[in-house]
Length: 302
Image (tube, rainbow, N blue to C red; front, side, top):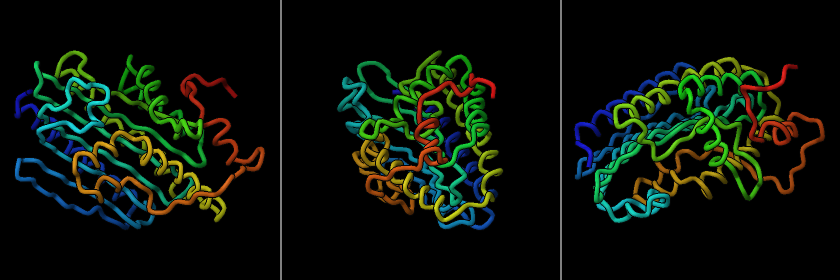
């Protein structure tokens, strides 16, 4: 297993990132604050969930940090690496979600994680990424989001964007969860220092990608009908997290506090039977144009 001092480097960075994200979102909301509930486990682990609820501009946000140690990886963490099943491990991770109040502000998710496993040979890897789930998309917002993601990941952007499109997909609905972003797993490229630097580039770019979008849309006027559509689309988000997401499965299988694992779910959502958007409406445009994989950085001029 990789040295504890190395795990501590990643832990320190993710705790700093958690604090920075929470402070920045509090500044954007202007009214609500994040909770702070650190819980230390007897074996040296730490769970530090932070949740902001019922704010002026943020209906709910969760920025969760965890440092887990165990004698056996949960099944959700070994689906791609079955040879690691039954091995002792350490994992440090941050996972966050923002559910804005305004339907014109997209929901967003970001996570970073680092696993180290005691196997036949030293095994470790990074993973993470971020994606954007709009309800009433603006093309310039989507282009900005992907441009920052590309700046952070360089030559790897195309591969990571494709991985994001593939992962955040609701096969039972035959639609993407949102407009994508970047996603990576089992990342060891260039050794530990190079992989850690790459992960930091991703983590450090998140606020640069999201906050400009949040800031320019949070005060935009919206109707009751647009609010209803936001709640309807939040139902899709809940479906993904409960039926598909590996992170949710990992949290439940690893015995983490259920309130923390499910903090990513929206505070309000609705399911409307056989909903049909009016042809040519912004609601129809969401599924017909935006929830399709496309190269957002090479769109034709209009």
